[in-house]
Length: 96
Image (cartoon, rainbow, N blue to C red; front, top):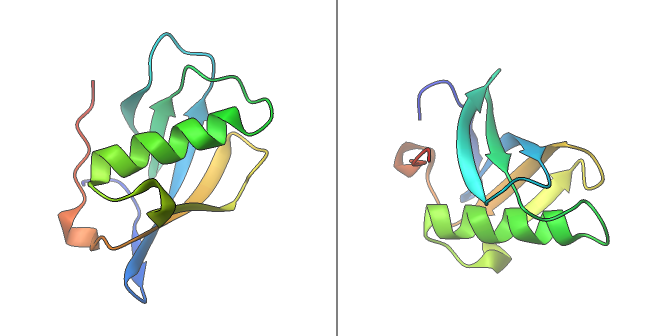
């Protein structure tokens, strides 16, 4: 995906995600400063937004939710995620 900074290593990809919680619906907004920007309906309470993020990314990338992990920024709006089982060249996000 153009503009998204993706690293590929050991059968997984990593990239930065900027989360906007409490949105009207879960969706990929676009790319902002090299990071994927997503809107989530969940509030950032008790890990609800993180779980919603994992589910959204898993569906968008065609992998299981367990293949998506937050490796940095667990309690922040800007997160680093690792997704196993996807190659950087196969990454496509439909903005909606």
